[in-house]
Length: 117
Image: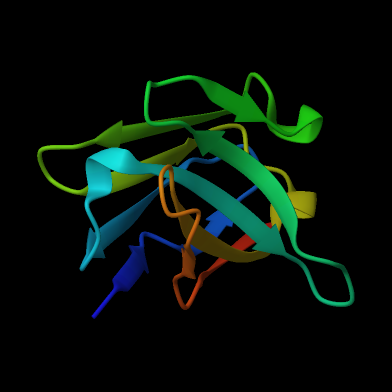
């Protein structure tokens, strides 16, 4: 059974930092592209950052220079380091995996990030 478990969310003041983690089980992590998405109240879910099997990364313009995505294939874990947080970063953050060969996608349950002004 596939499980993506996010952790690391919480309440932080504007300008602060948080590090999100996504622990994966039930998939061959090394052949999955990993992504972080977020959904704020009343808004559509949007891509924040993704890291491919080979290590290439993509970021939303709104987080470039502030957020860093990484992966640890030995620990089946993806991370999102978030610095210089802004109130507009407040959202539920979701982890997603996509099999490079199977194209199957799985989502985690999400973790709340709240940035106070």
